Image 1 (cartoon, helix red, strand yellow):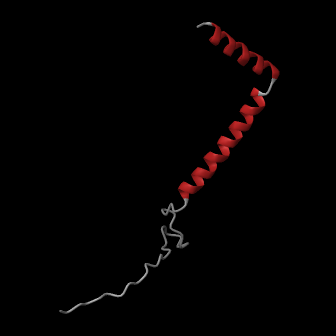
Image 2 (cartoon, rainbow, N blue to C red):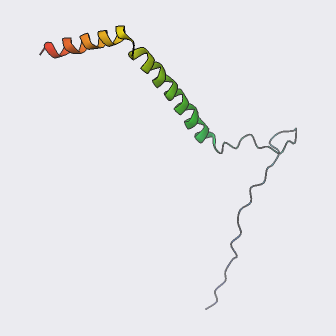
Amino acid sequence: MDHTTTPLTPEVAVATPANETGTGIDWRDDTGAQTAEYGIVTLAAVGFAGLLAVILSGGDVQGMLTDLIKGALTLG
């Protein structure tokens, strides 16, 4: 039996000019974009949660929520 093997060679990423400026940056490559989006969404969620915490900790809002819950429980 004749077994032939091909050597494994790693693929090498080469930056190619994506435009006429020849910057060597491939702007079409979106590697890491999803991670950045997750980071931005997480920061926005934390900011929104902080804003909600400030608003809900106010006395007027707590009173309204308490009245709403009491009203919902007494309807049954």
